[in-house]
Amino acid sequence: MRIFDPHIHMTSRTTDDYERMAAAGVRALVEPAFWLGQPRTSVGSFTDYFDSLVGWEPFRASQFGIRHHCTIALNPKEANDPRCREVLQVLPRYLEKDGVVAVGEIGYDSMTPEEDEVFAAQLALAVEHDLPAMVHTPHRDKARGTDRTIAVVRESGIDPGRVVVDHLNEVTVARVAESGCWMGFSIYPDTKMTPSRMVAILQEHGLDRVLVNSAADWGRSDPLLTLRTGEAMLAAGFTDDDVDRVLWRNPVEFYGQSKRLDVSDLLDVDATFEGNSILRGGS
Ligand SMILES: [Zn+2]
Image (cartoon, rainbow, N blue to C red):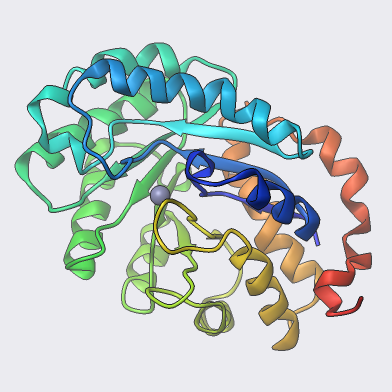
């Protein structure tokens, strides 16, 4: 199985994780810029973080044969801190960099007026820099947050086919499907979304415009839940080709819209995904 994890925070993970991911078939990933847990108090903390997302982390990933890309943005949570607002001014120079494949994570945390403003400004940056947008939906009040997200995306004028709305569940999937945006699902060990619930969603809604990610970060999470979802798909009767579509071709198609995705050399060697023994539950 070849896996492209379209949303994983490797900055928070160890080399053991990189090693396990490589062994599981993860060949490429996207690391969205997000909140680090500890609130930042100045723009310099952001630029150092962004520099590590375009410099150090791709190097670290490459040591395990994994192609690292990132998205850059002022995240919704820190959009509420006036000390961080200046980050918007430094974004344009990062959005021109090679490994940056989208503007993200943007969207809502608590749905404040500040978040409204920063979300709209960053969708405009995505349009201006001809990049896709990666949108986080709030973990609380998800249905309302998703509706408001879709409305703001619509107002921005960005092509919905260039937007992924992430962290969806059974309640929010239909409205995003209808909007024309891509549907992102973050699979967690015991909350929010599991591999078996993901399989049920794929059975109901199909495989179009669907991205599955582990969203692994500094909280309780598991970078191999993409693999586990692929295994659950096969156990439920999906084909190897279906799994390849969801776990590889879909993220390549979505982030390929940036024209900066660099996986063409990986595509050639990856035709052998059918032989994956981990997937088969073999040795
Ligand atoms: Zn995230």
